[in-house]
Image (tube, rainbow over all chains, first blue to last red; front, side, top):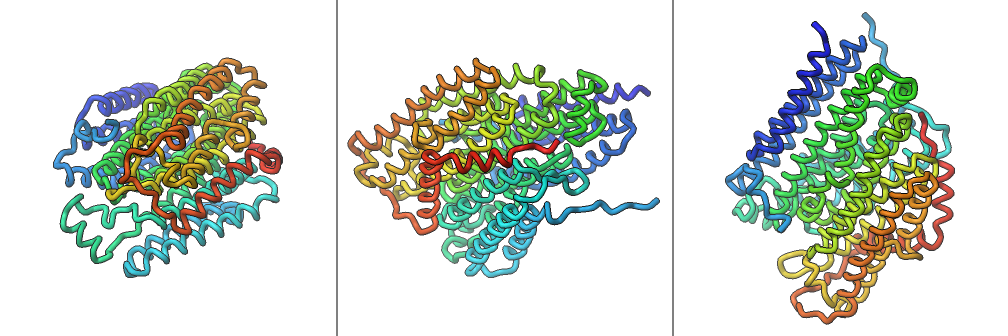
Length: 99
Length: 505
């Protein structure tokens, strides 16, 4: 199968994630959309590794997974803290600043 | 199948290894030492590591430039200069972090809960701010030194993730602080995803992850120009977000305002150095051959950034927000150095970063001193007549503002002069005109604050200026002296930069 199709898939997934971050209101869902974008980038890396015939792209995919896991830890910590003090994880409620 | 162990040049990596090692030790200290002694030990570890690391940087200064860790890290003149700058800024930032009671006793406790009160009363105060800052400093030192896409991405995250948490640790106004952390995290992670997606396409274009082979592919014509274009744009979005350039600047004022002021001082000063360091390397080394493709885009961003930063700052009523918009405008000025794409541009950007870092650190340190019963006063209207109450603080703050505005005899003037000269010599007249005009607009609101402090009578008696402790005092004075000395005798530093500033390609 033509590897270019995977690039299209990656671009579509990335776009879904990027649009999702902008339109969704719940911080957890926004965060999931960001994870989707990271995984789209991973798919692109692996596809390019196949196209270029070297392994570097696949290695980066592993690095990205580790970094994404760290990001989950930090992100959920922040979202849970804010949920505990406000009883809401909506990003629209977080608007005390900029007034 | 046999694996060959990669060769690690420990000497060249020593400055970063010291910092990361100290960060790990600080985590262990946090877990095992009792709360009573922890704060002092943490500060000693942090300052010791920064000094040791700085000694390593000085030690490396004379040696030939080299790549380390199988070509993924490069140690050359600009990197050593930026690492040195970051370490000096971090040293004084640690003094600020140590000094104030700015941080939540237990970040996990709900604001206003009994758990929080008990932690404060019994002195069970966590000091996780030190290891977090050390990790951020390590990431900042690695970011401009990274020579391939993997290292760039990992360094970006290592510097960002601790900063997201640090923004949420304020003791007072905790809801604002947590909100700043949430915004910083979501937007920061969003931009990291763009950065990574861009990196994927640059890898696809060049077939290799190292910046030098991307540079070679750009010069020699790679596989598919569309990959280069997508990669370049996405990567730039990620970087422009980190430096706070318009239209990706929306997080800056909120995060600067909500974060504890010592953290704001650290991240405003040091993150800029790291992010611009990486940006300069990427654009000079990897994408220099495609200059005609990215130049119009970055020119537009630079002009927009300068104008947005300067104009919106006029309307701000909060000191920290005003300084945030000022930092956005400065990001625009620094972009003109990136655009120049010349030796001169690189040197002037390095000088500008150093001077800007000191003035920022000093200005935010002063913000921590102006208080009322509930904490820091950041409302500009309540700063009116500050000079009557505390002429020293008002005078020092005015010095930093004049440096931001670029008035002669301050470091900011030399920085702006050299960077605009470099941009002019590279033939980019539009960006110079926009820069000078927005400097003039910016001067207006800096001077307005000075007039408010000196020539208007105070109406608010509840505002007091606390007597700074030794640590804060030291930070403020060193920052002020650096701002003046670099403005009057800039030649030694400029010469030092000129002898250092050649990128290894």
